[in-house]
Length: 144
Image (cartoon, rainbow, N blue to C red; front, side):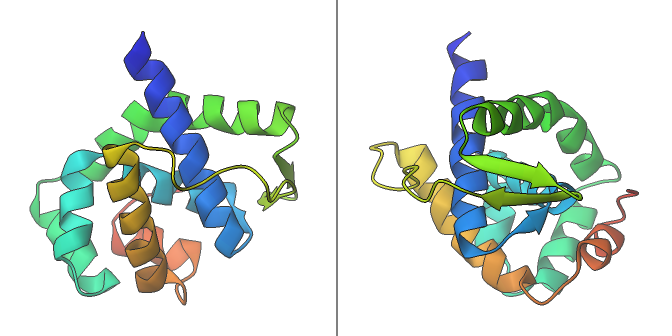
């Protein structure tokens, strides 16, 4: 039971951390959160110099790896979004997530795992900040 709670809490912090950088579609937030929360994918982010290398490394891990991860973490992501929305931390309209409460903590929470994930979030955001959601899904061979 703790694992479910922790994954949802960590995804909540990831979403807030990313939304402090920019508003984003739910599809992009879902993809980035999945890339960040999974340990195997996190290691690939750390070893990749750019999004092209990241996408190639993920595709080289075997067909369907990221699709399986998206399916696996989907319920956690949706729960995290619902909790954040019901808590008036984020709003959702026209397919876009927006942060409305800037005071929600997204660092200094005392978790080594979360610290690694947030460091990877900054790396990943820099890699993909000029790519559209569609480009990212296409490069990773994921269908919307």
